[in-house]
Amino acid sequence: MARRRRLLVPEAEQAVNQFKGQVMAKEGFKASNPENVKYEVAKDLHVPFKKGYNGHLTSKQAGEVGGKIGGSMVKEMIRMAQQNLNK
Image 1 (tube, rainbow, N blue to C red):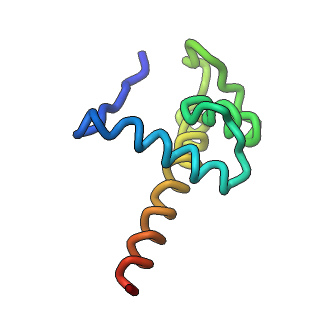
Image 2: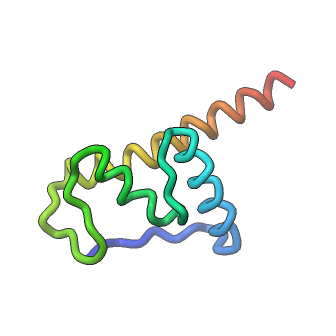
Image 3: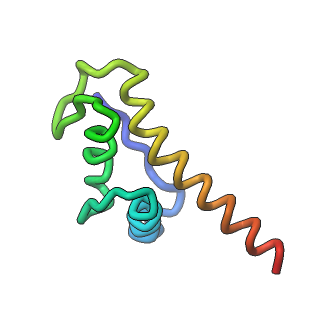
């Protein structure tokens, strides 16, 4: 069973999803819903990720998908923080 991580501030979920959508759009992924971007990333990485149960995936495959999304978001947050420091 997949573990769903919850935000410390539940009210921030909409903003985080919006940020995810913006970051991944800059990366070239055009999912209509930020929650669906993982399927586009998986397809791009040739990982057989589908809706529902994905117990057949290796840890490496799942990490490639999540790492691409999370890594892009962290890079953008660092870029934004550095930009704010330079003001």
